[in-house]
Length: 448
Ligand code: MV4
Image (tube, helix red, strand yellow):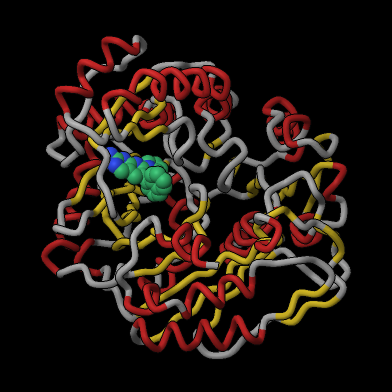
């Protein structure tokens, strides 16, 4: 097992990883930017190394500084968390070359799944359902339009180097296609330096359902059930729940098995997520694979009892999975509300600043992952996720009541937050009924 792990991240996920390491008897090294001297992850780690100035590109994204800090501190592994370098195949490759264990899949797999069009073709070959669409990448609008016309409108144009909704356009009619293709392609070239596009038939009124998987280095793969992440705004998830409401046991089983086939086809190792679109008729389609631990991993931990961070560490250290599919039982219901430092009344404008006072709810079935403390100043240059409020109860109804009570009790003074907006969302008839799709948040906002 590793003796010392460097955590190449900040905020609540760095704290989450440090806690797992402590429980495993592994020493920890935090890295921080000059804006994060007072951050909780720095205080909780055994050692901390400053890796540069405040902008992420000069600190948390500086591969050479992070590798130097790892070698200087004698750490044998790096946990990248999510965001930052977590899905950077070059960084994973540099770790491999420096004989540092990267806690995640191999650089080759990150690369292959990062190419969303190639990932789609891998899934077709593995018998995982995908939405009908293009087989090859497209760079020419006129040629792409021929494929769209054959496929039938509406179509969704996606950047092969994108993912998570960046560089996407929906073309509802033939006449809009060429213009939308060209704007999407320009955006992709600007954002990723890669204008390779692909296309799919657009699935209306779909749910975003994702399956958590774990895979060891010996070909053993298990899935840990699904999460419904349909409650999102501009591709930022706001509420997640596990299990997904109203899936038949048959469909749940099929999606889980498809996720395991997908992970095996990708020769995946570590913790990963397979995203699916599920339509009203119960059809499911592979969208993309995320090759990292995700923000919402905690709700899967609540319903399975599996510590996903510890499993990631054990897998990277070469241990065999000691979980078998039959041992994984989904029990009860978990919901997460993401608490952001932002102002919903000002179009969700970020609201950094000093936490004047803080009261966190607690009690049976409540989990809060946060790096906030009273007196802490949230710096303006990173993302606005301030806390993850998770509840766990025997069923969805009880979990919703617990979330309602916990949101009412949660007090963060000194900054604006989305707590009241989350309260409104979870009490909305459409959310309560469990019958919501990815357009739910936009619908609520348009009703205000
Ligand atoms: C889709 C889709 C419908 N049909 N693909 C969003 C993020 C990325 N993982 C892919 N996404 C989608 N892909 C097909 N063929 C719907 C989404 C989607 C979405 C699209 C537009 C606006 C909001 C959305 C929220 C979730 C998913």
